[in-house]
Length: 221
Image (cartoon, rainbow, N blue to C red; front, top):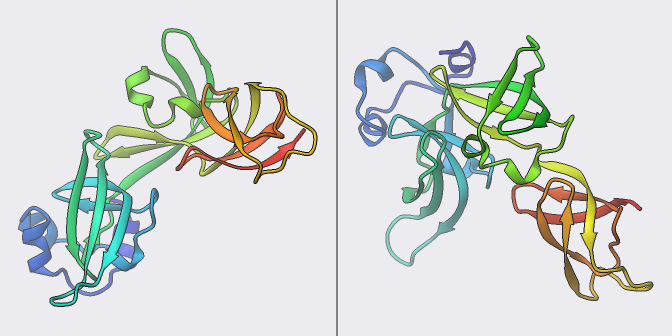
């Protein structure tokens, strides 16, 4: 457990929460955690400790029924197994923050594996395609990514929230076309295919939201 897990404790551990999150009383009774409430959820970035595992909040919606208490419908992805799970939580329910270890890894090249270099100790590490499922469409030589580990085991790699990627293939752009005038598919240098405005041409550099596979703007012609 890192120092961070002790640093911003927000009151004693709720034993009702302990039962909901796996009932590991010996573990929880010794520690105080940063707690994350449902009101703190951010799509595609919030990570919580749930059922003794770290989970990523993919999406959520707050529901206020006519009768009864408010609740939050949530879609989660396990950072251990990759399983997608839907769960409903009480509004305001809190979760421990998982003690994840982060390392900055620079992508070097790919052959039968994908080779990265740790930017802290310069150690080179190779991964297979399955281990990089979350970033495989955003791999760009020289770019840096976050490697996540939990309890000493590498879980996944995360791309930056936004990346600038060059268009390698698309239909010719049309003079005068605007973002509101329709869209077309474009293949980017990382292999990702997404919908872009009609004015985008091959060789343009686009800003892309990696959480949604979404075109944001053209940053360079």
